[in-house]
Amino acid sequence: MRLLRSTDLALRVLMRLAVAGDATPTTRQVAEDMDVPYTHAAKVVAELQHLGLVDARRGRGGGLALTGKGRTASVGAVVRTFEGDGDVVDCEGTSGTAPCPLNSGCRLRGALRRAQEAFYAALDPVTVADIVTDPTGPLLLGISRGPRGG
Image 1 (cartoon, rainbow, N blue to C red):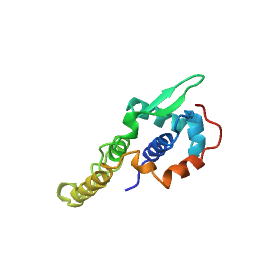
Image 2: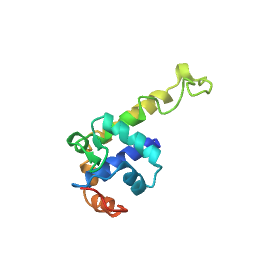
Image 3: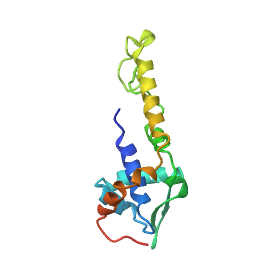
Image 4: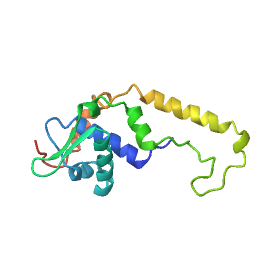
């Protein structure tokens, strides 16, 4: 299974903010740290804010901060939210392709759904705080490219 770019970035933003301490980096600074386009980071940050995982403040002294809910958020829940409820494969042909001719009697679809659920189940007990412990936390702090507000 391959994660969407937005899912990957959401997890990396949460991780980066989890080690920020009192600093409140801006979306632009986080985008630079993660080497991603600002517009992509802004969309992800907006969704994380909507979910209550990130506090984003504008203006002087503003920036991003991880909320308490963000620190204890389940990685599985974050991945589910960003990935959506879709199947691993498009058996129905909803993405502009023809439906699979095996759709009515295929056993692969069920096996893939069970594998997908096992993937999420393995991530469910893991929190954002868990994934920034050593050695990850110090590595995240090392990617900072400039001064941060506080």
